[in-house]
Amino acid sequence: MITIANILHNIVVATAPIKGGIPMSETEKRLWGIHTYDDNLFLKQGKIAIGWREMGNLSVIDNNRDAFKIKYQTVYPDAKKGSIPVGAGMLYRFCYEAQVGDYVVFPSKSNRMINLGEITGDYVYEPTQPEYVQTRTVKWLKSLPRTAFTQGALYEIGSAITFFAVKSYADEFFAALEKGFKSGLSTSGEDPTVGATAEEIIESTKDFVLKELSRNLKGYALEAFVANLLQAMGYRTTISSQGGDSGIDITAYKDELPPRILVQVKSQDSDIKETTIQSLKGAMREGDYGLFITLSNYTKNAQKYLESTPIIRGINGTELVDLVLKYYNLLDEKYQKMIPLKMVYIPVEKGN
Image (tube, rainbow, N blue to C red; front, side, top):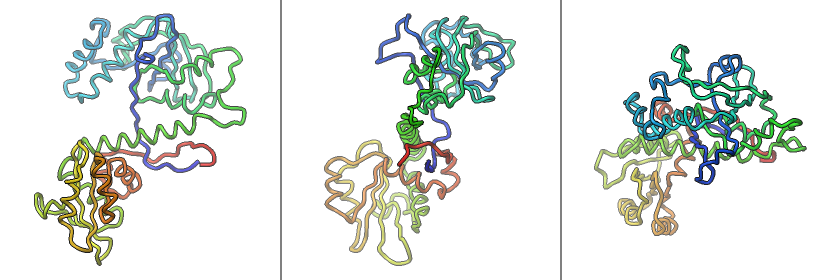
């Protein structure tokens, strides 16, 4: 096991009960995952439930996703645009898509068990419940330790969404309901899904960081961030006055002596063209080095130009994220709050 720094604290994975873009047939077994903070409600009262009290009785909303989106946006007018289809879709699935006879998997936190059950009742709104007012009854069939499942299966049901479709590892959970079920781990004791799971977590983290940079840092705000990142890397930096210094955004030195590094920063979504990099070259004096940083990428001609101009280094969005993860703990607190990450250990394949 090795340390992987700065893994995303909450990874949001939205799923829906379809395979290959085609809705599952009514006769096909479906498996839903659910989370709660009230293990007793689920396990002792034979229920699964979610909150969203302000939405009221979901069954009076028309049986289509658009109606749920409209209701959700009305009830939560301050909700972020991207969260509306996620939240509305989850509520729609719980009320209408989940059917009696479907199966559910629930990872309980109090005893760290994986609980498998069958949905036995239609949706019921229970306003007298203190928190979880959207309910359905369930018959719990089996409880197994987390060690009985592969890391990939545990990762899938670790979704940050409260109610979701389980697809990739559904067969493994269905197999657990069979008599004589044995762990999905190989006979050597190694989990074949560990490598893929670790890679998924790392890639999800990188996607999150790049999205947060693109969303929060435009124009001069990105220049200030890059200057702070360079400081974390051990450089002394000076940010140019806005609109001045021939398009040079940051001047950096590794120590008190030359060479001088001239930095240009672009937050545009489109790829950087060769002519844009040439403008940086035109501002450089003999002995200078250039650094071009973008959240996007470079056109083919721009890449060729960078390859033929070794005194200018180009960094694209992916490479910038790698640097952010490497020097995250040295960034200013305001940037750590902007990109909230948590250092954790994750399992990796032996030999890595």
